[in-house]
Amino acid sequence: MTRRQITILLILFLIVVGVIAYAIFFRGGVVPLEQAAPTEQPATGEIQGTTGTTGTTPTENGTAQTTTPPTTFPPAAGAGDTYVLKKLSDGPVVGYWTSKNSNDVYYLTNDGYVMSAKEGPDTDVLKQEVKGVMRLEGSPSGSKALVAFGNAASPQWAVFDAQDKAWRPLPSNVITATWGISDDGVVATTRAAGNNVALTYITLSKTPYDIKTIVKDFRFNSVTFAIKSIDELYIMERPSSLAQSHVWLLNLKTNALTQVLNPANGLTLVPGSNNDVLFRFYSPNNFAILNRSLSMAQPFPYITLPQKCDGTSAAAYCFIPKNNSLFSSGNSMPDDYLMKKIYTSDDLYRLDLTTGGDRLILSGDSSNAPALDAQNVRTRGTSTYFINRYDNYVYAVQKTQ
Amino acid sequence: MRQFTTIITLALALFIALLTSAHAAGTPQLIITWKANNYYPINFEGRALPSPTTPVTVSVEGTVDGKLIDLSKTDISWYKDGDRFDIGTGLKETSFNAEDTDAGSHFIRVAATINGAPAEQTVRIPVVTPVAVLEVPYPDKTVPAGSVANLVSVPYFFNAASITDFIFSWQIGDLKQNTGSDNLLAVNVGTPYTDDQRTVTVNSYIQNRNNPFEIVKLLTEIFVK
Image 1 (cartoon, rainbow over the protein chains, first blue to last red):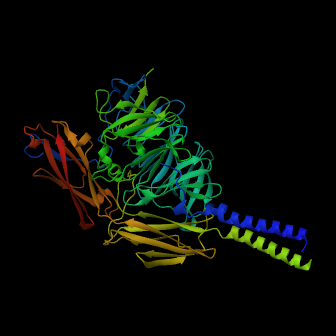
Image 2: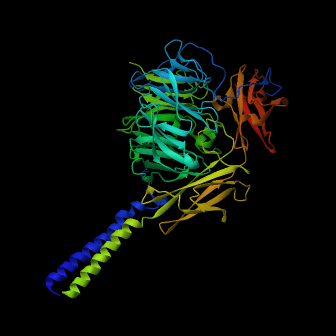
């Protein structure tokens, strides 16, 4: 062989070695799912008058609605800022949502009436009964709400438009749904031909709805969904301290499915309202605030549950149980909290996600506030909204000028 | 020159073969998810767990190169605690009834061959006894003296379809209360005279009308201040 031929052979050999290396290392995108790299670090009769009577209210959301004047609690002083707690709704609610543009707060009563929370008596938006509300999710702009109601085994889904003041049902074959990236559509699982379950995108602005199939047969049980971006959907297994849960990210264009957190018992991931910050918990007491890439945003020295937090890329707001032993001895978290075996008494903290500094904003069960067990927390501007599990009213913590 | 051409041809064949195999031999992965088909409140955000006799639905999805794939033509085998209990082409979903096991859980395995490569996945599914919860919506279960405390008895993981399938009964201290379908108890809390009277013991019972063996008793102490 000539020198030239040897050179060509050598080049070919190097190409072959290169292809082998590519196949072994770079196609390692196919790492087994279980090994996907974690991206996150780090009366007794003796008592006078103690008697019991059984009632007839099978709901879990408190007693009958009563109209009360709005309550404002004395301001709580933070370092430099003053915050005030307001009871916004006139009665117990099953869910609420807030408008991004107008800061209007809407809520559903136990009867399913839509009300608008106002200074003074709240106003009826639509007095039409909707029974058995099991889920309510405000749209990205807050002008609409997606609601599941009726029979738990086969719920009905509908969208309420606060501007039109009207309900618009989703197709009857919708099993579960979540908002897309805008108010224009929802991502839904639907019953399809051949007993299949399809993952679909339903465009609400079209009449009739435009339904586009993303995955023809899509079988994920006991999961919830949350949109991350126009093309990405979080799929999250419901949590239990007794079973491993997983969180995946599905690319809606390519159908690529990536496990994005290590599976863990009690694993819960709750995206903040604008997806810039996410809140993660796993049993028994591991809480973290994550950024958009699911790395730790800032260390947070307190333990709480993701349902008690919201925030932006600038700051996170979390209600923290005063008694953190709830997360240890004898309790199973998050199960005991989700089953309402446990009620917490919370303080509200603000975590600056740039500096990492945290600050007490409001102390519950104090001269400034009643006992607070906050859930469904949403921040809008300088206000933090939540439902207090002790009375199921909507409250707001607002920064005073 | 002929020898050189042969070597070049072989090298190119090897190159193409490697390229093709690198493309086709993505590792298949299986993903199992499951759900317990029993009773829990409609707004419960946690995972429902099976109790003995609960029908459990198990489903599988597959990925190759990290992308969801069509399993409709794939032979899929399902195993429970080591024994195969179902098999079929495109059988992405099946179910079984949970049993009271010594291990307190079932191990489910699914196996399939995808593009000639075997794949399998396992999952542990805990089996629990039905749970009764008494909701006491007061901080530290402490109720103001002289007030009316509203308590709610809530069943979880019973093998029932709706709240109307349950019988609720109560005992406050030594006093037996009504038995019926109401799960709300309003307790008129008096004014305690002694420290002993500051603790109220509430026994609540939940029974499945359709299964007399599914009955759970729960003792809860509430405090009067």
